[in-house]
Length: 234
Image 1 (tube, rainbow, N blue to C red):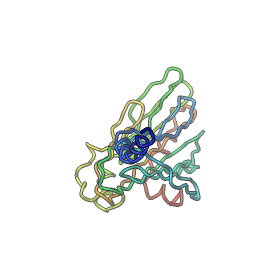
Image 2: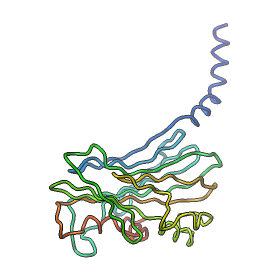
Image 3: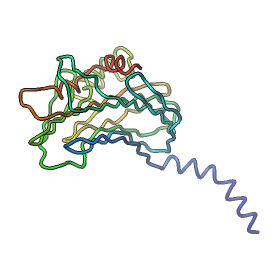
Image 4: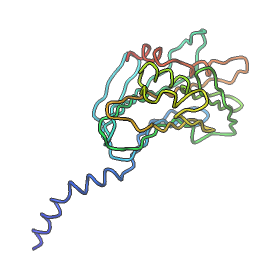
């Protein structure tokens, strides 16, 4: 009978949905428009997500997402100006990913911050520093930097159990990181975490009128985790 078949399909539906959730690829992204292009920052995971909470901080805001295996808080904020050397910026934006493994489900997760939809003729270069991985983008009028912590800082945080699992100590260092530098930004492959483990990733970006005598946009993206948290009010 037709009605009987419909009932059987409905009874199977939760199992089918669970299987489909594991096969889905979800992308959550935020965009920041600049004179050199659009910066996309977000995460990609295998599985379904849902926003479960929003939060306001003193100098920022966040959204918290729940996936099959993780809880992911994306904190969005402007970089504090004037900078410590007194310089200002045309504009800036930063994102922090606070990730916690909530189940034993194996779920591939990566975060990224990339300059896309590039305008005019732009040249790219690396702009690393002590504890900093960064890229620089320039055209005739503007300079932009995107920066993130390097592997050495991640290892220090592992040593101190500071939002990087201690068991991963010495798996990252000055020469290797979970974050890969691309020409136009960064992609971070989150390692397989145990239930309850946490990891923190930051991406900072800033742009200003091009001036060969200034390093303000580079200084803006070179910031420590604790100072950012204090500024935001986390």
